[in-house]
Length: 183
Length: 154
Image (cartoon, rainbow over all chains, first blue to last red; front, side, top):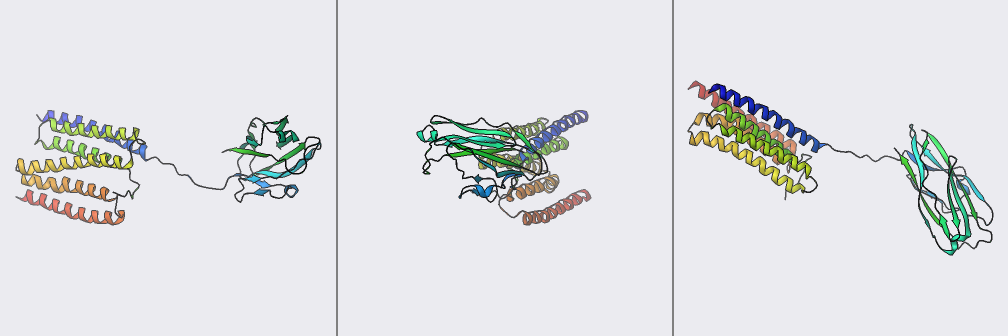
């Protein structure tokens, strides 16, 4: 009788250890949490040496994650902005960065034919918007480039309008480009 | 409506209920006043709690927090009511008053306190409840020990 009771107790103890351990593991897996902290962006925009050469209305957001550049184009002449803007890696570690096309408006209208190209260059890699008739040809996403730690890369912009383009200020276009940064 | 004022997940009640059932299973096996199947039934109840916990994790997004709280609390209440039931069985049905009192002070009251403490975390100020629970627990355990000593002297 006592032997049977001991056997029961051993079996129950083994099951108990299993059940409690398994329950604790499941509860622990429920408990795992994520903490998200807001910090300044490590890779951000900054004004370049030629920022003053931009048209009025250009602006940089206080947290330096958004920039609005107001640029112009001359008919049948290339206008170059050498360093209107820089991309600044404030982190000590390198980060992968690239330009990604988001949108260009207006498109597929007669006014587009007034432009020839609007080219952006980052670290020697071109990101070109060209026109074919009334349509814009948007660039494919740039391949990621390694921006070394505590380094600035200047963004160069070149613009050109078609010969005989309308110059009364009524022809404009808006380009939205995203700067992708890998952590 | 209960206000969830703590980081404690509702599944903690399930975990606590599993522990209570496991403890009850071992106790009923050691005490020897019950049928042989009773400890195994409690062990099965503990396994059921584990399965419930696992399902709760799998369906975490489907079930709302109050639904999870409800079924977890129900399981814990079931475990607690079994402990109280065993206590009453020993004291009333078996007429083992001394054992009933010892069981009440060493098992039933502490588990009820633990239940009350964690349940109150969902509404009250934890530190005040913790202090009050410890003081009350010390009184109950002291009374229980006194009963045990008195029973041995007789």
